[in-house]
Image (tube, rainbow, N blue to C red):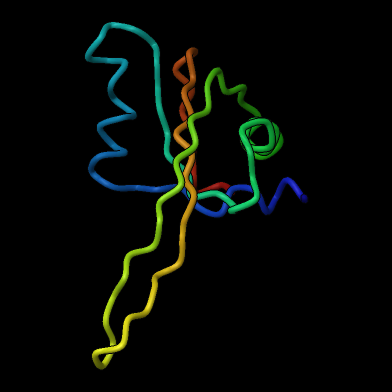
Amino acid sequence: MNLENVILSPIVTEKSQDLQSIGEKLGKRVVKYSFRIHPDANKTLVKQALKSMYKVNASDVNIIVQRGKVKKFRNMPSYRPHTKKAIVTFQDGANLDFAKV
């Protein structure tokens, strides 16, 4: 798998913004970012992709698979696609600029 295709997009929500500032509340230099990743990606590929794209070393990667919801369209059930996301922890307080990439 190509490393440019591992990370699809950053997740910028209110909850993910709270994760970025969690280290400030604890008095540590811990920063967490959330990314939407490719369905076939694993933890080591996410770490390698972050190192090549943003030039930072991730200390921890947690991966979550979100199952697609069942929705009804004209009384027929249809499924939204499954998504996979990664929550990446940086111990050194790294700041990522998403506008550059």
